[in-house]
Length: 157
Image (cartoon, rainbow, N blue to C red; front, side, top):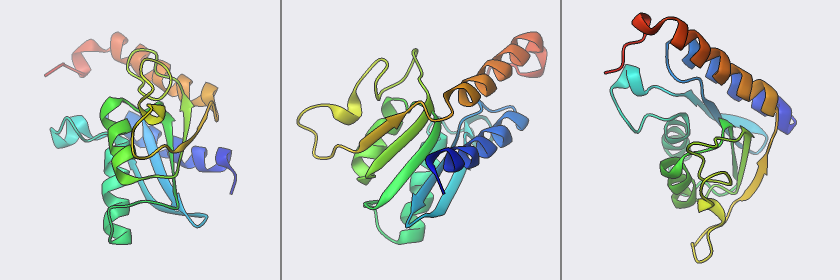
């Protein structure tokens, strides 16, 4: 499969999050041309501030591979990872990160911070950004537009 095809799979996960009222970010981890883990944001459902799509796929991939080092793996995520997720990417030794759209308010790969390429860290994954950026950005725009329109449906807790 191509990067775009894997990103489509991450977008399917983002759609699941959208349908659940979660911020629509989806992620998949690929090893040896096979998706081994897929998740979407679940912060509201799980009442867990760390339940970002990237964290959830990393946890599951570690369980599946029975190791904490995810060398040989590629992470596909619809939106640029935040600082927490970027740290988890470094710590799990993911070889490659592919993301769709930038996050100019919280991105920690290239937008606000450059965590994954910070000099002196013990791991530096390959990065590819902008894969299906329009589609990845649009689902976020649609979600927040709907949320603003239906404030009472999605109270902040």
